[in-house]
Image 1 (tube, rainbow, N blue to C red):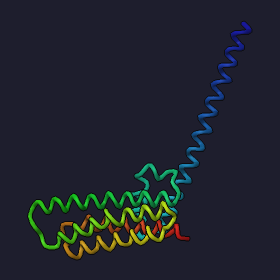
Image 2 (image 1 turned 90 degrees about the vertical axis):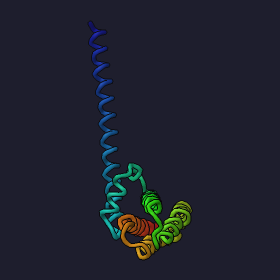
Image 3 (image 1 turned 90 degrees about the horizontal axis):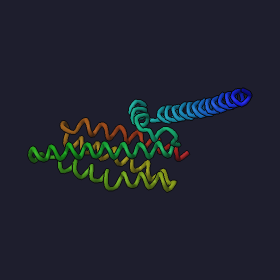
Image 4 (image 1 turned 45 degrees about the horizontal axis):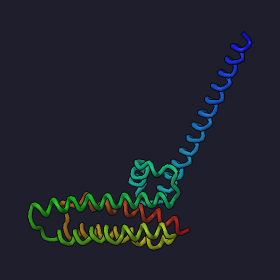
Length: 177
């Protein structure tokens, strides 16, 4: 009888310890999550397009737990995705026939993918944010150049690239301070 009571008390004690550990870990997780959201929101408030920034960062699970440099790298990844979407659209347009100005867009997006994005990544990772800021600004110029040379079919892609690159530039600029 005494052993049964002792075993029952041990079981209850162990269950309480486990529940306490789960509770503490969950509350810390919530605190980190709230802090991460605050960092994302405060960072996005310093960009020219809050909604694009919030949507881009909150949709990426790596944002939670990232510092400002990590958020900037995530935005460079978003730039890369937008550039690849534009290249896909350009290829689709090329298949439907030669269009004046489209060659300029190919060159613009090649420059973004081959030059600007690697330079932005390097600048952030090497602690030289000025290079990353310039690379993001160059991507805005390239997207706008495509829009000027080939208005119409790529407007959505060019605007998306310009928006995310502007946000990236603003986030990287925070690293300069």
